[in-house]
Amino acid sequence: MEVLRFRYPLFLHGLWGVLLLIVFFVLVYRHKEALLQRFGHLELIKRILPGYDKRRVVWKNIFFILAYIFLVIALADPQIGTKLEQVKRKGVDIIIALDVSNSMKAEDIKPNRLEKAKHEIAQFIDLLKGDRIGLIAFAGMAHLVCPLTLDYGAAKLFLQMMDTDLIPVQGTAIGDAIKVARKAFVQKERKHKVLILITDGEDHEGDPVKEAKEAAKEGIVIYTIGIGSPQGVPIPVYDQNGNEVGFMKDRNGNVVTTKLDMTTLQKIAFVTNGKYYMATSGQSELKKIYDEINKMEKKELSARKFSQYEDRYQIFALIGLIFILLEFFLPVRTRKGGAYALGQY
Image (tube, rainbow, N blue to C red; front, side, top):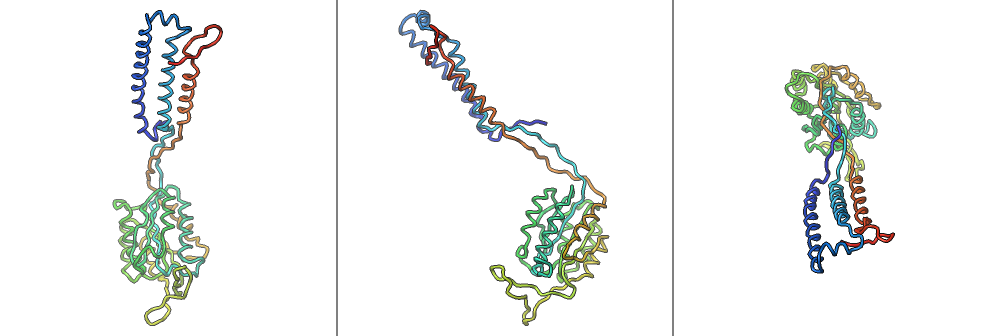
């Protein structure tokens, strides 16, 4: 449906100037008539004037007013476009909870665990077709970074913001991430909800399996991806310039290692009818999860209305210019003696 709107509607108030122009031209005309009357009988003087045409004066005034109208409309920037109706899409609500603790800087997966995970999540978002996506960052606590949305571009912008300095409290609060996700989903629904947990550590903050059971009651299916080694790897430390200067140590000077708790992640996935995946350098796990999600029942989701408009001020500016030229080249006097005698008001 074609829709006309103005980008700068405030300029349309300039159309009130048409009234002022009409009053001005009427006053000028009356003033000229009064001046002519001083020199004698008005009708006799008009007959003496060579080729004088009162109608041409009127048309010049009309052309000037029309030029003014179209130029004012051009200033308001008229736009014509197609208003798209609300689009209905079918999909699933998906929230990805990403571990952003310091241990995710480990480089056993290049360039490091966190950057590799973010890269794969971005590719996962590119696969989505109608599913809503949300993002949670967690370390010692969890935070909803991006609420559920169909705006995949915005979700990827929020994804780029997720780093180890985003959450001030260190740790691996998987249970807290599940709790935040439960609140982020539509509470009244009991299906169409998927949570993807990506982490490399153990949860020492609570009982993630208990939280997973509560999530299962609300129809949330949890897929877990474990990044790292069950044997443990050291956590790198960086200086202000981003250069690695060693490994994290405890109070006794011993190197701290981060171990993957596969058993807990497997239990979380099992109690919610999800699946556990072990991260590999190829990171095909999210593609496998996407294939699983595609098999799920979809719900109808609504996209926002939006309109696309194109500027059309050029047309009105051109018409205004044409009227200006007509007003300028239209002579007040008619042909007399084989030529035009151009006159003024």
